[in-house]
Length: 249
Image (cartoon, rainbow, N blue to C red; front, side):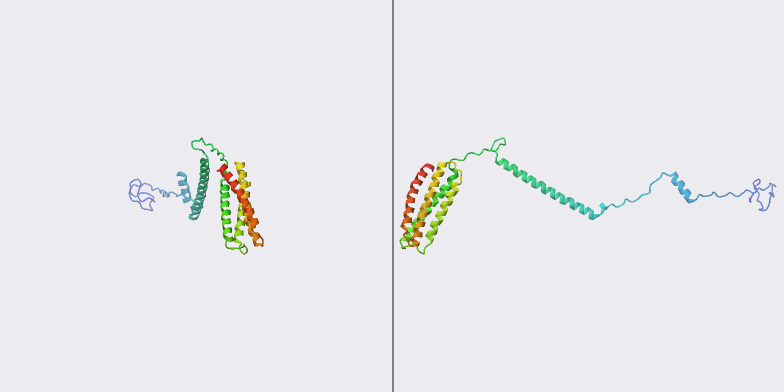
């Protein structure tokens, strides 16, 4: 109920129906109701409806690539691949360089890249080594003959002395080997080849004569027959060798 008269403003008795001062009827006014508050859910809904929608922040999921061990393995694999690729490129570059170097070596100076033509070998060039071998065998036979004569000056036979016999056999094998090598060669000068073949054959006969004389004497015979054979072959060799040196040296 009102505490003051709305017409004259005099204080009112709470139980009075009329104002005691001005006689105005006192009308009870219903009390104002407090505004009803909407539930929190509805307020939240209205606020979210009125404001622009914002997606709540979510922390990005941690991927496996952030793992230090996995990152280390990836780095190691990349390094290994880099080493293999570098080695492959280095070896290929070396092979290419070697191949190019070989090609350059075969090119004549000032040429446009064509290989240098091989010059024909001079006549008899591929026989020079065997010519020197022929001369060396000739020297060895002469030294062996001197040793045989020196032995006979103080001994009556070759019994018990195999050194001279073995040396003669070694010279025979050496001359046969040189002759076989010469026979298998494609000589530039066939005439020179035939002359050299004859000289090796005569050296074999010379050494065989010495070998035969020693063996015959060791078996109780005379050494003169073998030595005569060797001496005859030596005369033939000297004549043929002089002709060879005059024509091919």
